[in-house]
Length: 417
Image 1 (tube, helix red, strand yellow):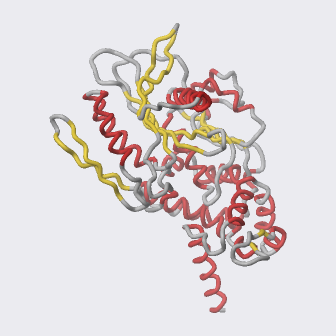
Image 2: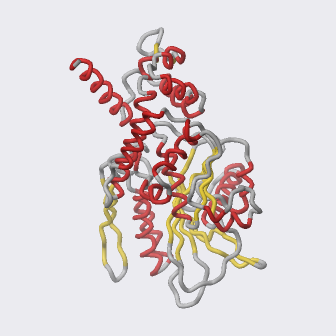
Image 3: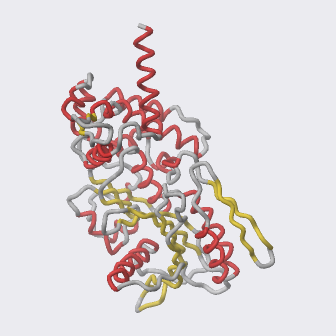
């Protein structure tokens, strides 16, 4: 989360398709706020990022044609900066209002904040203003930029004037479970069976290479972000491109771990780089031992939790059921990590993790076997490094809460015996 003066967003750009040669080239037609007074290296860095944004907004490449009907779509992607920090790109593509045929244009907001629902609502407002005139987007975004970003569970109200409609108050609310605010597990569960979700989770948890194939950009971005959210409180540390632009399709050949989303039409164009038949998109090709990675008892517990969700659940209910099932998995496998952080000095001293004692303390053979593998991942390593640097007693948050509940239940069980 951003600090008390956190901005909602860093900038908004509008990307238009401009006729060039035999096709259309995505170009930035509008940027807010305008960036002035930058040094040369900053400018070069900025141009690289803007170029990447145009590719992510129109990943299909240059084959566009003017159209009179187009279903607007919203999706998101992650930009990784030179220093490894990540920013989120939110994109809405739509057809500008008018009576002549033209290609769609894209609105893209770059923000450090991961909150898909909130930005979808901001796009609704941008779209409403765009239908009247481009000039009306500016005052709204200016107001938004001046507003502090609300804490989880809080709202911010933005006054905005639209000619003919008068002044409106737009209320933007941030969800309470901030780690779920970027996620919609319903799409993931709609595309894959529960058993398949577990195979994908197993591959992700051991940092394998994962490619999703789908027709729609919205589906790809939601599924890729949902899978990385299943890893909470751990963070996917490798390449994550929820929608791979056609120009970057060779990234699938990389030997390092990745989580990628590829549009189905690119599969036929990319001469079978990915193997497999593009007709089978939406199903899991199991490459290796993913079925036997997770400890069987815990695997079945997750499966049971997923099968118990209500038929007509809301997005929030889905998110709660799914996230709690996977969070519970990490609580039971590695939730005892904090007991193995020891410090030799006073309260200020850096703590060190006793990794051998940590996994030796696990009673179940299958769980111990899994944890030993999981400890070799980058996500576990980074998680522990961060824990070592924190002073003891400062790790609040939902993971810690669930660990405490689990440990207290365990103590209560022992007393009963």
